[in-house]
Image (tube, rainbow, N blue to C red; front, side):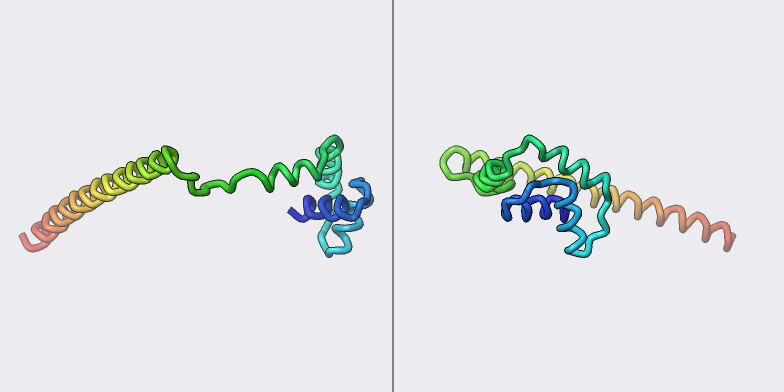
Length: 118
């Protein structure tokens, strides 16, 4: 992440996002710089308009944000209800499996004691 931050700092300062500049920013921040990561970053950002990318990312809705209302809200509520029902069913199945395991353990324990005391 610090490599991306270095590129953002350079962009904000109006400096070229070049290997030398990224390395200098990272070293100034006390980061152990990996030359291959610097090269990969600068190559990846070569044809990218960082200002546009930042604006696009800022305009995108946050993941998991609540729907704006209407049918979308109803669909989200239904999906949440379905997820809760599935979780309840999974819990019930797990409890039933645990009870079956407990019964098997009790039977096995009883057999061992029977052999000990004849």
